[in-house]
Image (cartoon, rainbow, N blue to C red; front, side):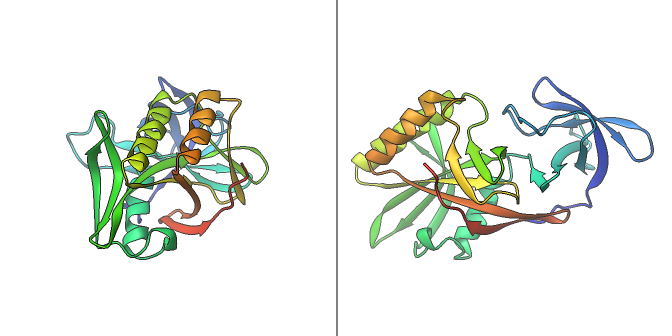
Length: 233
């Protein structure tokens, strides 16, 4: 996934109301950027951090700037949660996720369960339907350990239950956790942040829901799927 325009460097002044951030640009001007991330963003929202913004020329947008990346001591971290779904879908279509290879058709945002939509649906005449739910990961509290979630997610727990139900109905269901940072070598659940999600994950795994974790290669020009990370559960 390539950024459509060159990113703009800035310094974070504050993140507030979840979806807004004030940033000082190199010329001294201050702008308000959209934050496409509803999570707590622990360790990624400290005033003074170097951040990278994209800018849209769409006159219909209320905010022209979007916060894309944050710089940490470990490197770049992607904070835009709208990128993982298309990135994973493109990687599957290109055969870069061997666990999900060989399906004839890929569709996105397909209705399933109880008023839900699955991020990616894979179908093939020779095998059961495969439902793929993608989760963005950017939390790291222990060096090298990526964790999910960074805030309580009742919606995420609901998805786990519905995926377990899909397996019971004969489908294949796979959770894909995409780590938008380059300084992690393993993945686990932040059970202390959301015990209900951790319990739901364990129940879903017992019911046959699969789990994969991949990390991203991140540059100022764009993001791409990098490599699989082991699950330290």
